[in-house]
Length: 529
Image (spheres, rainbow, N blue to C red):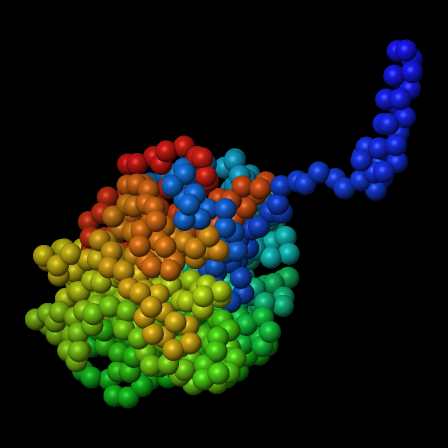
């Protein structure tokens, strides 16, 4: 009897195996974790959208966000680095142009690259060293150092492969932001000291050897200003480079500037192949208020008057958002004021002139995010009035030193923040959220219906993308000068952000400090400080 039963069981097992149920060659393997999703570029994609399709962290689950791992650099404040994640490695920079590579899931350090940087070569006058990240492509990490060198590193080991000079730092030119990679080229912008009046440019270098391919000067020879503070945006399809440009030099002037000076306080569009100008646009004419257009331009598809349009969006320190046709530069919508503005704007004076927003207000550099599903642009801004004084070189009151004078926050006027949702076609405001502290570093939008950002009050926020209401907030205790990013490794979605503040923090008096925070669902409580 036992033998008969055993035979029947064996026969049944063989039959199941023949039908594919026993794990034969044709069996479907058990499902594994979803594929890894990185954050490979400054704005996640070529268009600088700062949008992620990840949705595990959504309105229902965001309350379970906690700390996965963190890292604190030594003796650093005003940290504005924007990390990137390629493969399973997270790359971040410090203000001394140091690059650190971490295991993106565990936080284990993989390597550190510490360049020799001359911080006194001329560009540091009136300016604090800053570095906003690296570009990673084809197994290489590309860094622009503070003393204006372009460096290529091996992404796996951190070994230096080559280094080349972008500009002479004695001219006042510095490097603060990563290059943008396009078809074997590295597109680099110039930052620098207003006090030195350096001449702005966009330049392209060969990504294999570092040889310069072309250079476009944003202002005429003999002039200063027009610096390009943030990474240019390159349209991968058309090969057009879009770069926001800074104010003319000197930044402050009691004399009026007539007309629109090409191409300052606005944007330029260049051919990425040879650097020739496609079009240029001024956003603030006669700029004597230091209204840089430092923000990286945003590219996207939208519909205007019933037709599909490739558009480019951009904001600057005046606190205004522009939407243009990416091919021609023609305005597609009226400029939209994100915050209250002093109109008409008075000129700076030796006695002091108060203007809203000031030199650190509006949108200094913080990138926007774009959700292609709802066709919405999410833009953060700072509401900070400042007093301009021409010829002022006193260091009292933590002034911001500018060419031609200085700017200080207005005593008794608390700086605040604003988050605005704009229709990406006509620029109309869908909702506007007033925030208790400045939002300087930028935002992240996700398919989970959330918009993430950190404020100067030390809280990391997740806002409902449809209404602007707070869906979650976590106490960190440090101000934020960078935007969040998100990625997935081993089936787990992480949200990462650098905390450390921006130049706004010097005016608000928020406690300095720095920490890289990486969060996940079910993580440990945030380390409030």
